[in-house]
Image (cartoon, rainbow, N blue to C red; front, side, top):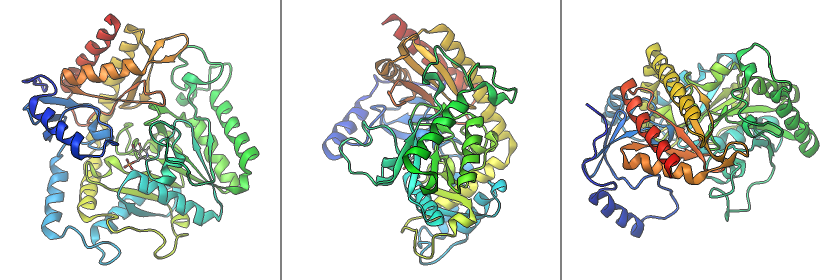
Length: 460
Ligand SMILES: Cc1ncc(COP(=O)(O)O)c(C=O)c1O
């Protein structure tokens, strides 16, 4: 039986009615990818208030990685709700928080002894990671990257690269934030066409006449030396795959060079794995497959599969630098969210879960690479494991970003039963944040709609 089932026009009458109320009562700021209103969600499928069934290829922006309402997670949450829902870790402690910290610490064995701080959202964890780094180093400057996205609070906004719509009109931002070029080799100076994935990632040496990882690192190091001075840098924060910025993987050789530079200059290396974490790239954390260990890793989204929870995990020496009362928050590490996260970690202990995620990633890669051959509107198909995307351009040679095309695919898709999102500094990247538990047939059903959407662009 197909997962998609549409029984009204899209959006249906009840969705339209709720949207009319939303417009009247809700702040207009939060964007909406679709005009659909959810009634129920299970696995890879969202059913709307009009009884239409959609395949969800967004996982609520990379959150429900184990699918909607994963039974083990739901059971853990229900069990915790029977006990207590909130005491605040700042008042009366509970085991779930401590057990979760212990298990997250074990994710970074190369970092030596680790400790964990829990918060609620990705942005909040990013803020706190910077606090830990500044406290540990006694320095102020933080280096972030072009295409970087770290959230909506003030420090997170300052670290985020894209002005519209994230930052415009909200200045002034916190000081001592500097920006380096991200290793985006599709749009790297002097690179024509699609350079493909970093060839040196295969450990076979870089066959390009110029090593772009070396160039990107040299640009970073020179910026830090000239504009900041290495001894003033507290932290470097980077997403192993730039998420909102366009699903651009940072090649392992570049990250290794960054790691060496941070070691040399006593700088805290922070990986923002809010979007790349919890199986999204085919390993639990992306850093595990890239072979580079940060000092601090920031996690959220898939950590609790839908409950609000985030974490900063890393070297105890860095985390211990903040004394009693220096970080915290009423809801930080909520018991329901901790129970969910422990269940998520249990689920990932079964090697079949990540094996399936990688299998789906390969299925997705093959289909998206095929689309790139088929449709001239695709400038590049890229990603890491199942975290994959298509960059749409109106001119392949000039690589002119085509935001309208991405929007048109998103619209065609939801009108035909598939929920998919765009991203990218230019808004022209179609990203796939598939449920990592979906069936092969479901993914194929969804991709057939995407193929039709791309074909409709070709006709337009
Ligand atoms: C890499 C990254 N960091 C931080 C954030 C912010 O997380 P939140 O929206 O939970 O504040 C996001 C959200 O998309 C993200 O992708």
